[in-house]
Amino acid sequence: MKQGDKQTDENKLFVGIDLGTSRSSISASNNTREWTESYVGWPKDFIAQQVVGKSVLFGAEALANRLSLDLCRPLEHGVIKEGISRNEEAVKDIIKHLIELAKPAEGQKIHAVVGVPADTLKVNKLAIRRAVAEAVDSLMVVTEPFAVAYGLNLLNNSLVIDIGAGTTDFCIMHGTIPTEDDQKTILTAGDYVDDQLFSYLIEKYPNARFNKNMVRQFKEEFSFVRDTAEEVFVEIPVDGKMVQHDIKNEIKRACESIMPALTETTIEMIARFDPEFQIKIKNNIVLAGGGSLIRGIREYLQDALKEYGQCKVTSVEDPLFAGSDGALKLAKDMPAKYWDPL
Ligand SMILES: Nc1ncnc2c1ncn2[C@@H]1O[C@H](COP(=O)(O)OP(=O)(O)OP(=O)(O)O)[C@@H](O)[C@H]1O
Ligand SMILES: [Mg+2]
Image (cartoon, rainbow, N blue to C red):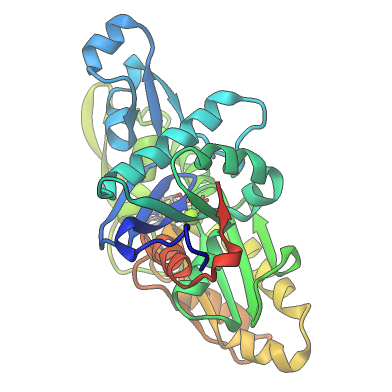
């Protein structure tokens, strides 16, 4: 290190940020770990400003006050819409908010590794960089599944499948930093399951009154593929009265609707490799992201892949923080030359 840019470890805070479509989290070298839903809301007018009492709201609080706010979910389809500055502004606000939650000490320089959905990185690396740059001192942007893989030490012969809200991201690790060819994104993920479930429920219970948010909550509570002995009933209002509804078949169908594309893409990704490596990768498939919490999904995928030979699928222990923990590990380990000083 040159003299003059010498920094002690105390005046650096390393942070790993997982910037997701639905949830974003931060893990920091001062041991804080926080998350927020990726919603940002600004008061619509001065009355709204007085009602909510703040100039910007995040996550659950923003959702709860949504009638008074211009609400924005900036990465909704996995990309910041270019030229729409509101989205970029929202990403900026989320990043600032997460860094505040990590409570940096006065004067600490922030060294951030930010994981974003693979397509976001491909489509608008610059927009992401601009949005993050203000809040940090050095930066590296990586894909979410790479951050997860790094955190779990899956650097060689593995396939990480990150089932998020907007996208499912695949990343093959073969002993180097993954390139675009090692990664693939498909759009069948959590939001898609919600859409399916919503339409199945409208069809089956045309008189029941529910919205997308309720449907997502039903899914998160009861999700499963294959079978479960449990019955699945939820309360939904009909003509203003709460009524029990059986939604077991619809939950199963909606959750299973993402499985064909998931299986197909897994096979396609692995098939590109030399047969010797294929066997190794097949035995080291790891599911991450909120979608990995669907009960039975690991077994489902493992069974579906069996006809292509022996394989082993596992799930990460802590899907909410696997991405940000991995990004933090990367931030701590990364040699100086990879950092982009801002
Ligand atoms: N128990 C659960 N069962 C099924 N799905 C769940 C469960 N818990 C969370 N999810 C879903 O996981 C998704 C969120 O996962 P995650 O936080 O990994 O996504 P993200 O990182 O925000 O999205 P992306 O990676 O697409 O940017 C949402 O669709 C959410 O409804
Ligand atoms: Mg994610």
